[in-house]
Image 1 (tube, rainbow, N blue to C red):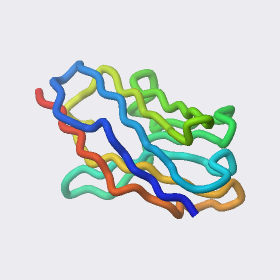
Image 2 (image 1 turned 45 degrees about the horizontal axis):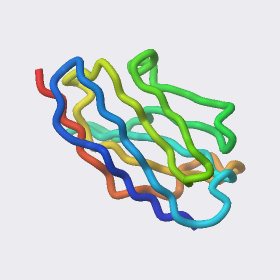
Image 3 (image 1 turned 90 degrees about the horizontal axis):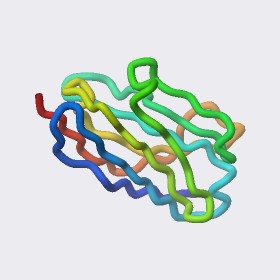
Length: 119
């Protein structure tokens, strides 16, 4: 099992940057896909980005391609989401999540961190 703790959210002006971090405690971090999701007020949670255990496979939501970068440091059991050129529509609670490589659904979730982008 994994426990996930996010940090790095906050308030930023449009065009600014933030870096989210997600520290995982547990065993075999490299056996998990790590992902970021977000949920805006009144909307369903949506996928933002994910990365395979070794970092060789990365996927992004179309609307964040070129602006967000997901990365992981397996030595530190940590995954990051660098967010640049932020827009007001990026405002949401961002969640870190993990799934075992052979599973299709994300099964471990962090508590979430608020990102607010002002116009």
